Image 1 (cartoon, rainbow, N blue to C red):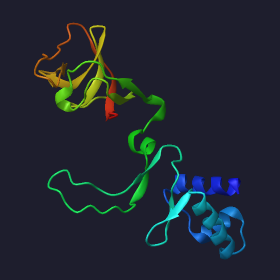
Image 2: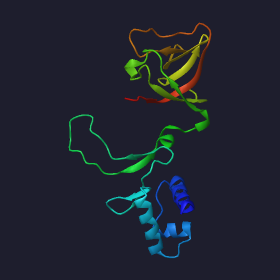
Image 3: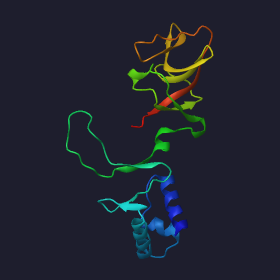
Amino acid sequence: MENHKRKIISFYKKSGRMPSYSEIMDLTGYKSKSAVHYFIEKLVAEGIVMKDQKKRLILQKNYEGEVRVLGTVEAGFPSPAEEELADTLSLDDYLIKNKEATYMLRVKGDSMIDAGIMEGDMVLVERGKNPKIGDIVIAEVDREFTMKYFRIKNGKPYLEPSNQNYKPIYPTNELKVIAIVKAVVRKY
């Protein structure tokens, strides 16, 4: 049964959806849909999958960072809340395009607070991409590292903080962008 579970999960990761009963028959070698039904009921009992209101299979367990997406929440005026399982989402798939070039850094300081980046937050960054004007970057400027907005003025790059208590940084020698900030993680 463990081998069959792995095949189902592998199918899900490759296709982004759970297999149909017929596809499960092909994956597992079961000869009847009743055998597949029995297998699915065991997966439901183990908490690996669940069935939504339309009896579709949904991967339930958190395999490799997958989190259930339950819908949306109103950030403006309150509205009636309806909880319905919309999908599952792998945070790695959502946030990381190039795993080898991606890493996290802990934020120290408050020069980016108006951008919503606070001391103690973690930032997910990706090396190797060319920055666009307005990207938040990790840069080496005159042999020191910092995180700021990437800007260009009169054809020359500079770094702009997101806190009025700090001044823009114009390099005297060299400004080298190391990575681009892709996401901010804050634990409450």
